[in-house]
Amino acid sequence: MDVLYALLGVDNHRFNRIVLEKTFTERLNFVLTMSNGDIFSFDDIKLNRFCINILPKINYNIKSLILESISMERILHAADYPNLTELKIFDYNNQLFSRYFTGKKRFSIDPSIEFGKIVYAVQYLTISIFYLVESPFRHIFQQQITDLILVNKSDMNILLLKQYPEDMYEYILKFFENLKLLSVIGIFPRLSLRNLPMTTCSSSTIYKLCVNVTCFEDCLALLDGRLKELTTFIVDIGSIDDDLLIVYNMDNLPNLKCFSLKCYCLTNEYDTKILPLLRRMPNLEELSLDIINEYRTTLIDGTQINNEILVLMPRLYKFTFYINTETEPNNLAHHLSSDDIKQTFIKLGYQQ
Image (tube, rainbow, N blue to C red; front, top):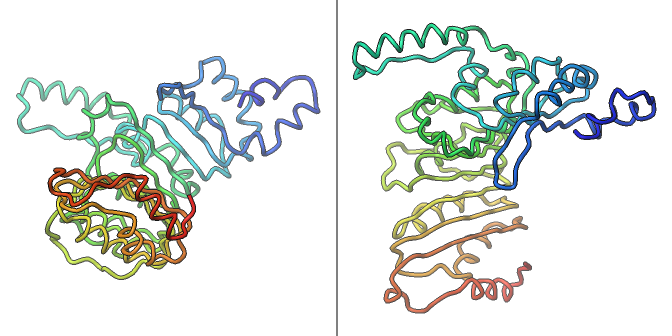
């Protein structure tokens, strides 16, 4: 980005030819990330130069854009992007969803609101009529985007979670017709599929999904065959529920190559829920487990992990894990450290 800003347009044909190469123009990042994680857009002077003088000259080369919510529309309006396939959006929020991903402004009045406040709400509706037009980037989003990454790490947005529509994930999967990768990172409502039709969130194109779900049943639902091309699944489960309301397809998942799981288990849920799920993944090549077990009476050691997980995955070449068991010391027959597990794996022939 700095090379483009500094050299494109200077009175030197050699410099112009160099900076127009795909190395400098295929992937553009308009987000400044601070050491504390805060993000900012470019200043107006720099952004003006990109939008007016640079983007129209390199638009055919651009395949990936990293944007933030404030300057997103300005950048997308600066040029046509016929080869754009990847979009990463920081500070994604409900307003962006309504404006760009649906073309509609969702509006409802809480029945508990006093009449005087309804007048204010109607005024707000008048102000928001701008959002009722069709999404200005519908063609790009629907036809071109294959990789969509949404990021929202601001703690201020926790209070706004209820403003997201319940069908946010379903609508994204339908709106982006050629979507292959969907990653939803940070503070978003958890995906919940309970009591919804078994065709909800189905896709014949998605091969990678990164999402937070409400409960274990939602994880099973996503793995019941509705995502036929899924090879990479990264999931954070809010809770491991006891009883399933629906009987899901529990066939093996031979296409799944990479699986990452983060969850919190009580008592024996690791044994009754997590292990049976992992046994459905015989062709995994990468596995990551971040599991906290509470009120469990026995520790999970290296031998158990090997016998109940690893030996069932002959193609596995990368295993990352953090398995923590929280229980009263008096309930344990022996104490176990991470070094103990490490030594067990070394003795079994695994390399760090």
